[in-house]
Length: 79
Image 1 (cartoon, rainbow, N blue to C red):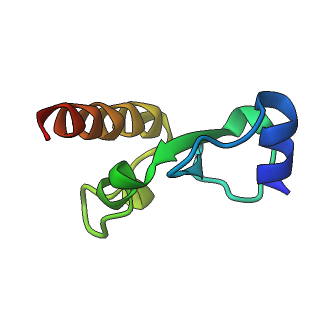
Image 2: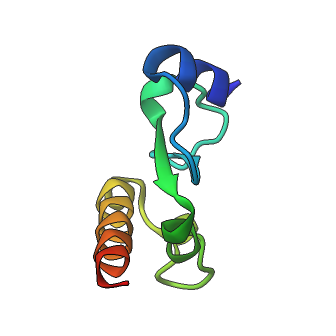
């Protein structure tokens, strides 16, 4: 349901991206709660342990997502 809602609001999901919930609540299917994340950045966000996105406080999640995207973009430009 979240992907349908997101695509209705934003158009097709970019290639090599997946949607991740900004607030961590997968049951919140509102389009504005989901953000397309490059596959290469997803691994950094789903790590288990104290620095993983799943363990982060809700208020830090947007910053952690942005940091992972920035690191991914820097890595892509270096290749």
